[in-house]
Image 1: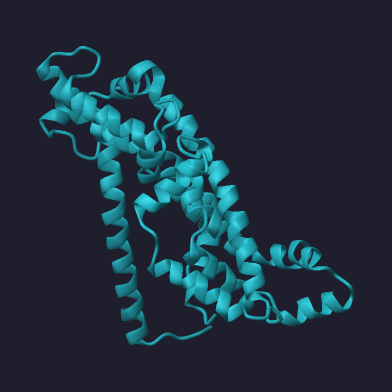
Image 2 (image 1 turned 120 degrees about the vertical axis):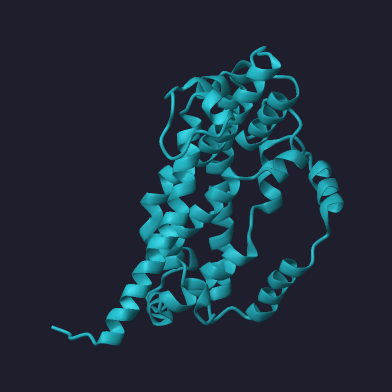
Amino acid sequence: MVRTSKADRIFDAIVYLIMAIVCIVIIIPLLYVLANSLSDPEYVYFGEVGLIPIGFTFSTYREVLTYNDYQIIIGFLNSVKYTVLGTIISVVLTFFAAYPLSRKDLKGRNFFMTLFIITMFFNGGLIPTFIIVRGLGLYNTTLGFIMPGALSVYNMIIVRTYMMTGVPWEIQEAAMMDGASSFLLFFRIVLPLCTPVFAIMLLFYGVGYWNSYYNALIYLQDASKVPIQMVLKSLFDQSQSSGVGGTDIVEQAKLTAAMQFTVIVVAMLPVMVVYPFLQKYFEKGMMIGSLKG
């Protein structure tokens, strides 16, 4: 049994206190938003709702979900499609780029790494990128939404660092001496050892695509193709300008006040549901980028 000194106990107490404060700072706003989204719009409008719903109702959820012929459901399904497909493409590109750059036997890997890093500081800008997307026939398409940001160099560096530090080069050399090809080495040895960073990339890219708004604003035109973030913004703007469901000005103001919180819950709920399943991998992966690569 390890004996702790008085200084250690004081330090532990301070750490727990700070953690408790951080938890409170994070949880209270979430409870506040959820309570307002489930409260009667009149109480929300007058700011009477705290952490517990008043006049419990799902009226604002019904209003949001049925908005403009169920456009929010269409946007939700579009976001799911973009998130799933985009995450798959991004993770594949990231690992396929990181693996060669992690191998010690790749000639000129520092040169190629420099080229990747340069793109983190310099790019062509919005107009050239838009011209390229339109020239390739990707404007107003699923790939047009996904491909401009499909590969994150920062994430690629994280994966490369993990492969260099977490996958012993001696194992790879032994497999190559036994006749393993590069593809076999990657899929049968390297990839199974990269489960933590693989989960981290799923989380990073998934959250990024789910919250993506800018690419949809620039590269998508049809209302039937926009993700949920665009639909929510459209709903919020329309509720402020022309009303929702034909309500009068006073009722519109009350409903708008409550819908603000409902929109937040709808947008963040999927990420909050998925995150707990990837939390253990997220904690492991947070230190990956700090390792020497």
